[in-house]
Structures are given as C-alpha cells and as structure tokens.
Length: 377
Image 1 (cartoon, one colour):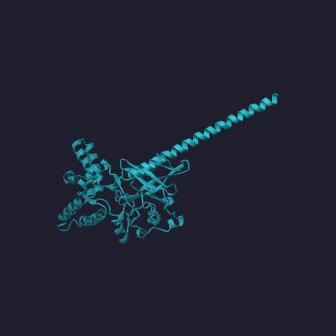
Image 2: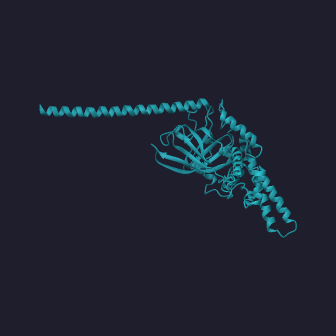
C-alpha cells in the first residue's frame, strides 16, 4: 500500500495526504444535538423477542415537547437489552465471504473509536507541521518537517475512509494519464479500504418500527457511495418499492469533513461501556414522507446514526426516528408473506367494490327501463 501511495510524495497531492481528515468536524449544517431524537422509549422500539413478536406494539410515543427538550447521552443508560440479537441468525455465503475479506484487510486500518483517536493525533501533527513551516529559517527545521510529514503519511494510511478517497482520486488521475495498470492497482486498493468502512457495507435487509405503521422491512443498496433504503414492505403513506431514505457517504478529501459531515454522538462513561464504544458516527441524509396514498411526497432533512451492529435513521424536522436490526430468515419470510396477504386482501376488496358498483349501475338502468315501460302502459 505504501508503495502505491509513494507517488504522492512527488505530487501536489502530498499536502492533502499529510493533512487527512479532521477528528470531529465543527460544521454541523445547522443541525444540533438537540435536534436528534434519542429517547429511551425509542430504544425500546425493538421487542424483547425480535423475530417472533415483531408485531407487538411496545413503543411508547413521545410528544413534540419531549422531543424538543434536548438530547443527553445519559438517555442511553440502563438499556442493556435495547437491541437484542435474533435468537438464530442465518449467515448467507455471500455475507460470510465478505466478512472473510474484511478480516484479511482489517489489520491495515483502525476502526471504531480508534479512528477518532487517530484523527486527533493527525490534527495535532498538522498543527506542529504548520508551526515548523512557519519557522523554516530556524536550524534543523527542514529535518523536523520531513519527520512530521513521514509521521502524518504513516498515520493517514491507517484511516480507511481517507485511503478510500485518496485511492479513488489517484485511480482517476492514472486513468486520465492513460496508465491503466496503475489505475487498476489503485482500484484494488480503494476496494480494500471500502470493505473496512461500516457505513458502506450495510447491504441487505433490515427491519425497523415505523411508528404506528408497525415493523417494516427495507433493503439497503448503494449507487456509488450513496446509500439507498428501499421499502420491501410498506404502509399507506410510503408503500413498498418506494425509497424510504438516502444518505450520501462520499468522502471529501478536499474538505475538513471527510465523510463525517456531522459531529458524532459522544457517549458518557456508563453508556460507552454498555455499547462498547464512545462515539456513534452519524451522517446527513434525506428521508421521504408522504400523506396517505403516497400523495404530497417530499424529502426532509435526516440523519443516519450507526449503533454497533444496528443503525437508526432520524427524520429531523418531525422528530421521527426508526431503529433497524437484521431480521432472521423466519422473520423475513413471515413479513413478506403477510405483505403478500395484505395486498391480496386489498385486491379482493377492489374487485368486490367494482362488482358492487356494476350491480348498482345495472339495477339503476333496470329500474329506469321499468319506469319507462310503466309510463307507456
């Protein structure tokens, strides 16, 4: 990997590679933590037996006033079973192969909270490098600058998001120059880094509770680096086949934000021990809402929040948040079967309604003809 990145040392991209991503960006796109609905009742949205009792209503709704009261990390405390795992999880061959590939390259990069610690170190080294460059005339500064650049170079290679973004840029540059062999090497390098970025590896089926509509299933796919959540089972407002939410997860190496366009949620000590991590990454997205019958559909500002093996999506302006977990094969089949039955019932009702209208119309004309005949007699 270092050999492939080495050309950066002789190009104008070195400054970008040395700088890397900021640790916790300041810019939040006018979305504050108090805008994020993270109540204890939301964590109770998953029933204790996730697979067998998903249709039981255990969610206690909160008022708009409670939503606006603000967010505190203490609300995570005392919910050890908030996200129970399915009793039996069937692992597909494709998923198992993906896990094996991830394990092979995982050692190259840091993960979870270590990413933030890494970026803190990078930020500190950046400041020291800037100071060294400002005092270039002092004795020994040239050597000091080289040492700092080498340290930053080494640290940045451990950041999967940064390596993914940089590899894509170098791949594109190589293609434009007609060096397709080097471009292919950068493509492989980018693919390896991408496998170690959780938010870019959420493909497949997830189940979450959409308020009063109950539990619904979505399918996560990607168009490039844009996450697309499509409803597999739907409701009266946003039916199946429609997009529930999207999140652009493209890294931006020319900015200070990287993928993290929003501040991560920082947990307190107790909550961090409970969830096994101190930071919950979140990303800006768009969530779709509509009136009944999928009318007046529109997109609202949203946030994707990663919570270990689970995630949530929040429709920020309306204070609505849905938590998602992986369904078992039994739950998947049950939800799909019930969706099909509901569709069949609606079709039968439509047929009966049409037949009733036809009979009423026929009756009307028969009565009309009888009245004409009575008039002639």
